[in-house]
Length: 325
Image (cartoon, rainbow, N blue to C red; front, side, top):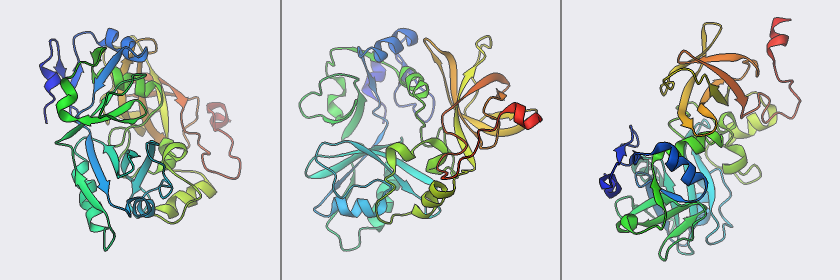
């Protein structure tokens, strides 16, 4: 659903999967600085939105999701994952309960599949699952006071879609600005920085979206095994890219070490202070100080997820010198 804010002067559509919102409004660097200082808002109305109502909603979602939700308090935002039976990440939900229903937003185009799965799992419980993407939208307004009728999830607001064109009191910033700040904050995006085999430990979602001491849920066995034994197959890294190159690595492009592929590029952006940056998913045992090539661009890695994440036994970080010795 094309955003009406694409009709603003200077608006340039983003690339897929975000083509329904603006990449920028003609001033990418200024927009990024304004967003970082709380003087801009971002149209993220391409996000999918799901509403789950009914008196059994919290204990039901608690039985399916990675986060503890059975005692979730009204207007307390949280995150949760829906995992496959083998523990692979299928959906990353940012959600809040308004006292009558749980509202969650997910990646563009993902709401339909999430609703279809949840509907199959209702059985005789008193829950009602609805895809409300056509009637509601997500905007991100850092530090702003939510307007009347908005449902806050931190800096994200769920609003009636008709409110997108209201006066927000600050300038619009495109998705390029939002993505640059997200990458700099080491925040992975499902389906962009992950693939169909990604497990929570690989991308640092354990701390924010998984409760390690709750009851059983789909995919829990994988989470528990990696938490106890460590050594997930891969790890998320932050890349400082060679600023002398006039292009960014493409999404899904290979990350290489000594001529062999050891991972792939997820998101890449130009940060107004850090320069060109990216997130990549690479093999766990790659030395943490190894210089890499991301789509042919020289890249220095910064640890996001440690190679020994989840391990009870200490595993020394593998460095290049140790590999050579």
